[in-house]
Image 1: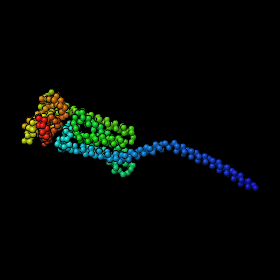
Image 2: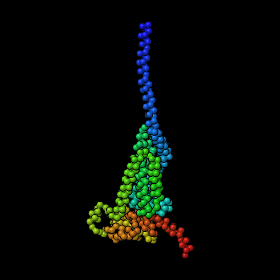
Image 3: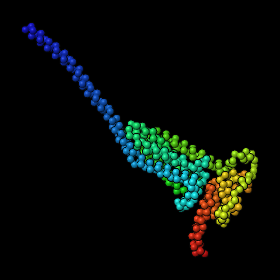
Image 4: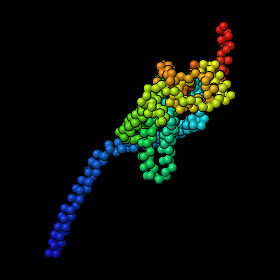
Length: 381
């Protein structure tokens, strides 16, 4: 009996102790359940926002890696090819702009592509434009060759902002060129229009696709690219305007030009005229051709040497420099001569130094158009 009471007491104490330990465990478990429930409730909205952002991000990624990347790459490749063609032609085949069917149909875009506003320090503007288009194309294609996904993501993070900067710069500079055509040169240039179309296509695609996800970063990069390009365009324009108005002779005569009033005579012509040059000069004289130039202009002197002393005597030369001998500066300003030399043939203006073959082709085109209009003139009589 004694042992039985001891056993019962032991069981009671043991069960009580277990009950005390079990209650906190159950309370802890209940607390954990409640805590997890609160965590789920509190993070539910954040999860939805993250899911929505992830879906938008995946949509943008799909758009950029699909048609948008293709459009930007195609436009950049076409722009680089066009600029390469124009640059090569300016250096090695300058007659293509005056004799080409496209320029002739547009009314002479060669006047734009060979004029003074088409270059800076003797370098065609199409040369740096070619490298910019090439940079956009490289940024578009390079990530596609990176197989490792983390490395590709890193490369995309570097190239996409650069695409935005270059695309914005191209569009800004194209706007400057379009304004130059409309308000300064009053000319039509299909090559320029096509390049502007490609630039605007790149910029619109890049900004429309949101190639840079962070809005603040994209806006800052875009504004910086716009301002830098705008400043560069303004400096190029001012430099060209100054070059057309202020004499820039060779270094040997610089001191004399700056200190003396003049007038200064152009360098003498030493070459003898060929039969081809003499015949062409007579044809130009019959069309009342004039050449506008400046005594300090090396291209003007080279143009004269190409004709020779005897042939160029048949051509009327207009001196545009205010310090040149027999200066007719007012006439040059009145006719808005864009650069030196500039040819006026039958009332049409052709800026830039021309080869004899190029001038002969211009004469042929004028003669052909005169013959075609002759029947209508006879009918009016």
